[in-house]
Length: 260
Image (cartoon, rainbow, N blue to C red; front, side, top):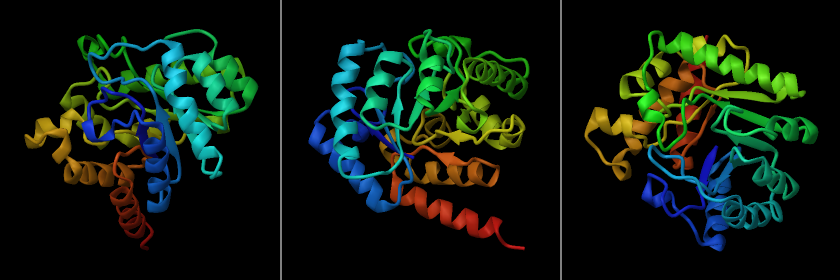
């Protein structure tokens, strides 16, 4: 899954593309490099970030989605928790709603996704991006993340979202400290026990800087290493800023895992 951030303030500066033609161009570069999914977002959710208005988010993402869909049938994802944004994105050709809130922030998103028969990614988070790190306190990291993801799954199913349309994301970096992130990656098999495909989004995140001392712009190699281990431990989708390197990572890991 290649990340298109139509924002001025995402944590990784090189991923910010507010110019719509350039964002569309980047999407097609990702497609050429082998991306399977393009994820378009118009609101930064880095720690401490503030939300943008519905109108601003729509203004940022819809022209990009329309521009991609006009020339490609690739699966498209919109990174939003707002039903109004999701509905416009689905009308523009999106297949997946990537909800960082796990259906916790606002009402109406689950019903919309069920009605439109789209896929949904349910991410684990506590609090909201502007305050989530103060909730990074766990007695049992894996047990609590898994239980709270189950709450999101139950809510999705109750709204009528089909099991085969649900993907889960343990929320690396969202209400997690560096140790929590490492523990989740090491124990992804526990998340797989929920019975749904698992997405992992760790590309260039701060826990990799905590380990290596590198800034986001220098965290490609740590990202590749962590993605390789995540794939080996059961991740089905990796959400990345660097598609070419991610595709190579997937090829190597799958080749190793397919040996008998």
